[in-house]
Length: 347
Image (cartoon, rainbow, N blue to C red):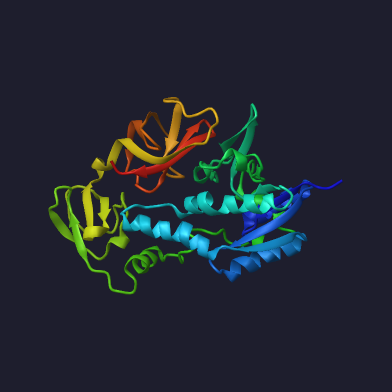
């Protein structure tokens, strides 16, 4: 009897390796796929080592040009508009899951899997995305856009894992170096602690960045800043402005090289505009009776939604939300079930 195939995104990290190990233990024919987004030999070699240790088929898919166009370029363009886009969300939405689906389709219409911490459930003939049972590792915030066609063939082997130690113990005997290694952090295409430098070079090239003005909401000059790439909405540190009130960045305006500051208390909003709205739940999104987050680790708020023409909506929060950042995602939940989401925009 032929075993059911599953195509897993194999990054060479702990989570994807443990996911592949679990699937193999459950009797699946596991095929590993590593996406070469950045010409990163270290990542490819790590994934290849995992596949060899597990004796599974492994493929490297070249996607550098597509990754540049669909992830890095929109990320930089967002900052040029004064937004703070999320590159992991862009990658999941525009690259990773679609490439896995396409590869699975030409390989016997196989299942697909990743090492994300989330859960897929089936209910009345439809598929639902749920947050992980492990709230400390949950990644459903980045997956609100997944379509039924992808959810229907998607497996999250780590959905019920309660701790990272559990994952490490599972692969310790097979992959001891990986199990004892450090967990990856940050944005894959930006060097560690190099966020500001990356943006400076991407936006301004090798030219020195001109200092600009800190201004208040009336346009009054408060001081000078060394370059807008150092600042994001909601930031309170590193401003260097003397004030009797705690100041925070309200807006970054690349066109005029200006950073707008205001008292932190004025960053709180009850109304949030979202665009590119995706309703993930087949049952739709109710006007009330949901919670929402404006960042992965953020507080969950209660509110109501006011639908606008097209793909826009206004979310009315019962309590003020601190500095919802344009370019970031706002994601709706009902309990642990993900109902959908959209991208925060300025009014």
